[in-house]
Image 1 (tube, rainbow, N blue to C red):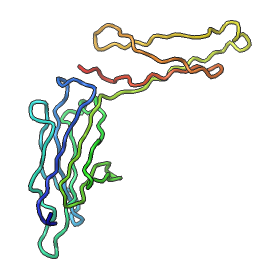
Image 2 (tube, rainbow, N blue to C red):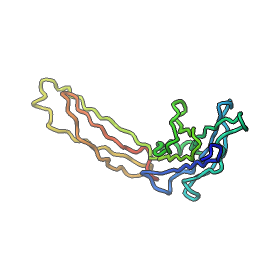
Image 3 (cartoon, rainbow, N blue to C red):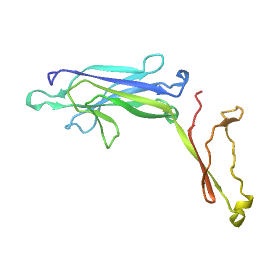
Image 4 (cartoon, helix red, strand yellow):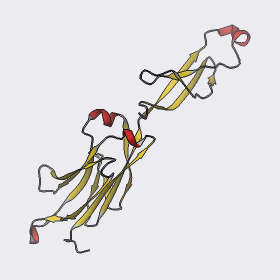
Length: 193
């Protein structure tokens, strides 16, 4: 590739653990900047949705600005933006696949492309989840061996807006003397619907 040939940047969105009907619209913003610019420049905004596409490729992007000896290379990056903030709260988004010329910028936590080569980035969204810790602290001291049961069961329920209680699968107690604990992981913050 001639170092002044235009490049392409492709962005792709993948979804995990949800249904297609609830995926929110979002936009991909392409930014660029040179070391001579005080502020980044917004190159383009592309909407993404189930009705359009979850992928977009920008083409004919210049690698430099200026002419001759005053040419300065561009740095590009892609940002995903949700028009409704509550939509972003439902998901955790991570970058799962980046072309070799993509580098994580420590300050902005964005993938930045510093090279003259074509580039790609893939974002993966999963429904946001959380963990719940449950503790049982026994205060039976000297009577523990006589009154404390061998095991203890509990039932954890969740209710989805105006629905019936639904049992959530839990794990076994971890026993450490007078303190018994249970960690329940991968609990969804939001339902698929």
